[in-house]
Length: 283
Picture 1: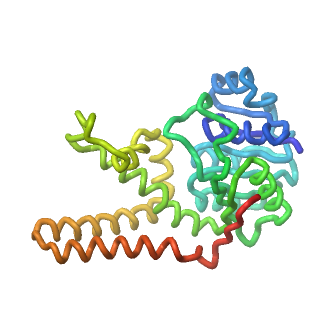
Picture 2: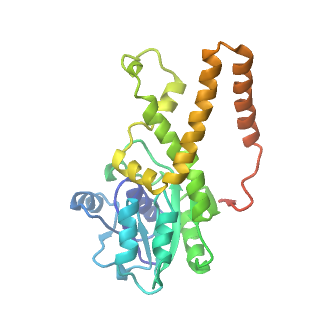
Picture 3: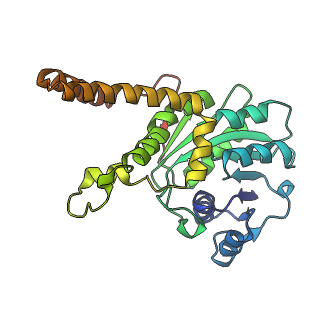
């Protein structure tokens, strides 16, 4: 099986290293030649891709707009499996489905990363034990889906979550994108300065992802705007409710609000995944 990874940042580089660790031969390609040179020199890839028609499986680790352009404009081998790892899935899937393709598309989203970016931060064990979300639809080729499932297992992921692109984008707006937005908003406070000695785990948890690349995340937010806007509005309403109880110095009301949040959280840990979502633990 000939594999190519397009886009050699931390995710693309880690995909390549994880595949190489599993004894696959992996070529790479990158728009900027410097990460490509680093990847080749440091053994992140085995070779430089010259034409995507040479590969059975192509992983695209690119920003959403660039991914859409690649899927729409590049030439791939007849029957090749092409998979993207974008943090949004519906806009990418829509591009693929707008006309007949000679390749087989499967959407992926590895639920792992770091607060840093770039090929230098890539590592072979980034995905060990993590979840991989795989999206599909009525037109998804089953054989291609099975190949991606196997490669996911081989790369060290601990869990596969399968769902539609629509469900993915709705869930990820809450579990990932809203969390990044909150972290970015949280650090925009004057008291962020001179915090040494005043911080613990809660501060670290809240601020850890505030320093991520704004260009990449802005593009993800805009591609999933409706879902994110809905989640932001719900958060604003919840914060306003808490603020109201504090401003009114209403102990009973505030306790009730906080208890409700605690019970909802505790209950969420007991509920199984939505019936339309398939979760498979890998061994």
